[in-house]
Image (cartoon, rainbow, N blue to C red; front, top):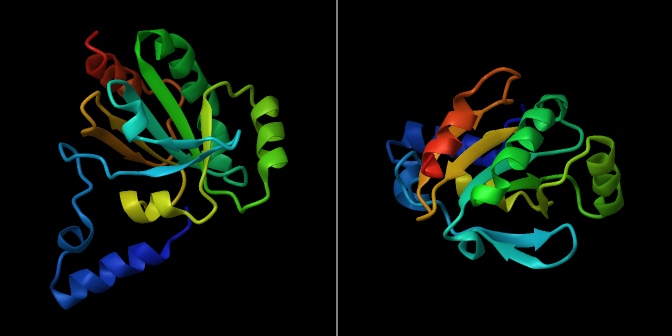
Length: 170
């Protein structure tokens, strides 16, 4: 996982005795998800606010990230199982700008059918205070963060499936 500049800001804030949360909002379980907007791979403007009323799995990833590649089958299976029940699975690609065709080919190669949003400037990382890829968040229908995982979703781990099922009311 790659360390980001905002992770350094968190460290500096801790050393200086101030909380990054007080400066940038709280990103934790039980708090409202940040207002995040970007563009979809198809070019449309998209936002978490536009998904209000759905349970959202927000997965931050990149094509060059091998653990991201490893978790795609689990994410795709989750999407296939719960999309009809109100789940919106969104993969936020932090690949460099101009990689649209490479991302499309990657999606074909890995049989990804869920939504992909583009964020080459990595605003998602600054807003969600992530430290690398992959990272995954579950956001409930009211826009509250209910679960967060740093690192890949492992085959056979049912934690994410159970959290999504509960959030969907199942």
